[in-house]
Image 1 (cartoon, rainbow, N blue to C red):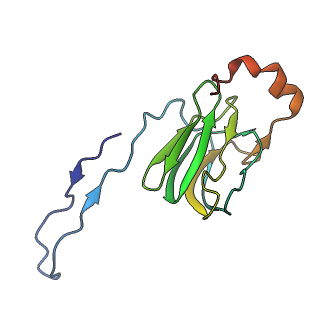
Image 2 (image 1 turned 180 degrees about the vertical axis):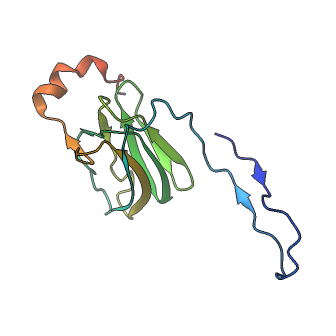
Length: 146
């Protein structure tokens, strides 16, 4: 993740006064695989009440990129260790066949909020819950848990 400060669009504009905008890079990812052909992009705001477990294990038909606005979120993707994503940090998932195991509130005493933009394949649901049989069959793909 790059955290350099970039001043973009620094140009003279005789019709405007005041300082130019500042842009801070909060995260970036290599976009691979690309979004499915004809994908629909949607951005949602998710509010997790205190101690919420979030969505059950699921997958997305296309990639998703998010930003935690408030609090902290437990985040776990298939093949990666579970981690906590805190306010001001980003998360990425490639979508497709990868299972998203956790997206619950890490905090027991306050809500957490994140914004995520997802690219969904045409005619596919944004989110598909994974059943217990498939979770068991793919147990070896989950990162070791402490």
